Length: 409
Image (cartoon, rainbow, N blue to C red; front, side):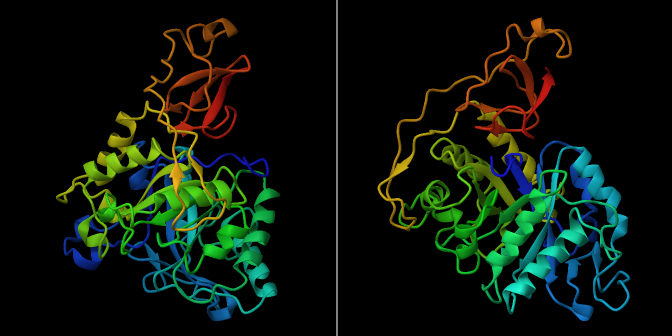
């Protein structure tokens, strides 16, 4: 854990906001739905809202494009700005948060206008984001009284300068807040990333959603060790990232139409995820592009997200190999992993038959928490005499945080 915040834990997430199905699909019934539509089950754990695509627009304010849900083309804007008024989304966001989901705002995107002209502007923009979306206050909050859980950087164009100033200031604001906030980034898989490589080296991020598609290092080349480079990202996580607990996610397209290349079916992606988790302790989960493609119950890949989650959780009793080491502390594409044999399959602790809200004696029969065991949502463990329940898939997260919440003191 870093700066007292909860460790980031989300086995599966998807980007919401761009309605990528609508770019090629003609059936409007399958277009992206309101956010809360996707929070009715426990499949998805995290939702980056995509995108805040303009940093400095009319009136010096940013702008949002959430496709068919909220945009300057279809919704009113705050006076003197091109910032859409999306306060109707507040209840959707809060519904998802109340269901235990992480909801963040993603900055940039493939067509985003990103960048800063100087350090002061970058630091000022951090305050703008804090006031518009997080724990600050403003009369022009796009989502009304909803307080998001953090910020994602999906920077794929513009200038790379002064992002460290932006993130450093934003992290300071987050650390002063009354809740846990998260910082994530979405680099391309070629290492180092051209746009966010320097800032993720310099500042503390909770997770990176590495885009393993539209590149030679994509999922379709998983079996080619010269191209598939998760080991390089694992090396970065362990030897370069200021946050030693940063999680590395496999970013994947949820349909063949969702990306130019890199799509693999749900069963293949699930197996890649399990194999990666069992080899690299930095593995955090899967991040899908995007909601409209991943969830579509009418498409040929019928609930791609649920199929992937099932693959992960059905094989969730095997703990990742915790002792992957590297020949050099420098993160390079040629870093050679030396991985100790994966531990034998270990069953996660079974929930006791007695009630979870009784006396301390109800801990009888519940296994003691072990750092290198993966726990599924609902699993119970004992730690320092207290009983804890996993809120979602958790690995190496000390009980008492967001992942393993206390039940019995």
